[in-house]
Length: 286
Image (cartoon, helix red, strand yellow):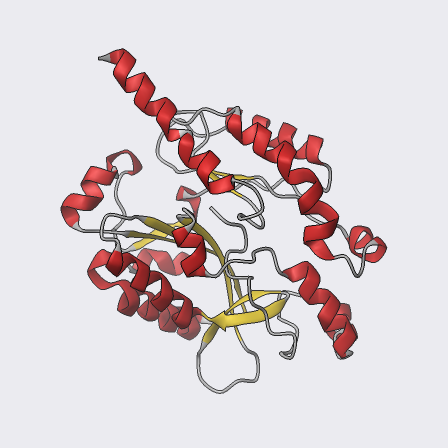
């Protein structure tokens, strides 16, 4: 999976998003401030299509309306506004059309400046984009690749808002827990990942290990021009990747792992290779 999957493009000319504090919104009237914000808002270099081609199958999504804009259009957001959600969904669907056996998870976990009418608009966009590819809510343990292939489903949508109850194809957010370390320290991050894996629910939910470091205000202040990638990600990704290599998938093991700038190391390939351990277990059992 990728963290803030859509943030490969954010619009530094747009107003600052409603996910930001009032003080930042005021500061961001200066175009130089928005340029700096972009350096810290972008967590991916690759487009949806490029991420999909690189093996990413879980997408972490934050969305918002644009306050003051007429209509109910919804955009991806991370400090600054990204592309329209509809354009992203179409790009993902185009990949799925060409690869009918691939299955993806779309996790809509943060909503800003959205009332119920915005939510219904977005949900109808999701339905229009994927139609029969959408997998309705089911017992997690039943949802194997074979199950998805038989039903010709390719998309699981997780929707962290009470309106999920009105649509059978929206999975509740609590089926996709994604504990967050909220630290700049890689050792604390790895300890947190170990602890939360140990607390993982044995049945009934998926699980996201967020292998990401989060800048604090003072981190940004000290390294203003360098941005997220050069300050936190480059230096620590090798250690994070070593942790990934040491993991085992399956019950109480890793399930979905997310990272920033997924192309900087062999992140996707390393996570995908962990599945071979499950095949080895099957072979030894038979």
